[in-house]
Image (cartoon, rainbow, N blue to C red; front, side):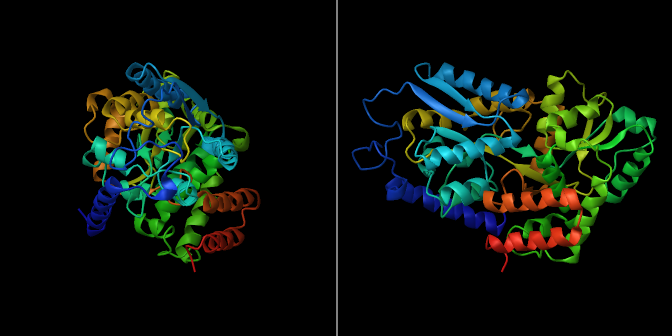
Length: 440
């Protein structure tokens, strides 16, 4: 264990101890029951029957909706007296859902629990606004620190308090490819950015789209993986902490690489969803696609077969690095049904819940004690890489930047997709880092 992880372990243990003694006043929602010693009751208000919970997410289709439904089925079996309201909102990989959520929170109308990405999306947005309860009491009761990754706990914590229950791990830096197209063009799977760019150039002269791309958020996903591939894990991670310089020649080189890669994408990308772009590969219309590993769940939904219809590898230049994101659920301050929300969080963090959800969602479990045999070939390979690779966080999917910073970058990226002006884009990225206070 690194010294940083040891330090965080001590912080978390101390936080668990103090949260067992008391709960900060600002995190005590109204109508919270207490035990005789004054601590919050783990079971809500004694004697009050709760019959319904509303859980908010953006999982509305494909493997993500199927995975959520699998977890809901387990929840209903365990808590048959609680009606589950699935309040999912479609669109933009969560962009639309977060906008609706922001409006509801502003109006004082929180759902009982909501899905959010572990990391700065939650800590730098909702925790900063005092909208989430600490979950140290639940981590202590369920003994989750014994089975959850030590590297993940600091990302869902602030000042020794843990604020969400992660249900999965996704990998962002995955290159999906059509094996038949590569074989027909005498190409092997590229491992470096130079090899990748050379392959894209070869494919440009064929009737095949070299690299599939969808709407703007998929372009941001591509952007963060090219940053990682060019800069390496240490410098990439430093961009989000102020230790690396957005104005550096290395970042400019990454932007140049990104500009080159974009030249090989489909011209109708802005009209396509991520699923549409993914399908171009398995339909034989495109050779490559860079997208998270929820793509495989979609391919399975289409009835496609690994190695025949699609293959996978780390994004060229990122082998040995796992760029991750994690979906998690939270307990809002003022949850209408706090008792039911806690029951949902218990299920989300349980072995049974994660083994129901993840094989269908196309992600790997957070817990270390789940049933490996339930997971397919790709997911088992992701489990192996998660255990040994260098870990870095995703930008678009909420790990390294809060919503304000991500929104600024996304706005600047949208302009760049139109003007392709590297000087302007780099200056805008420097300004965005300064505006959030990370860069001085």
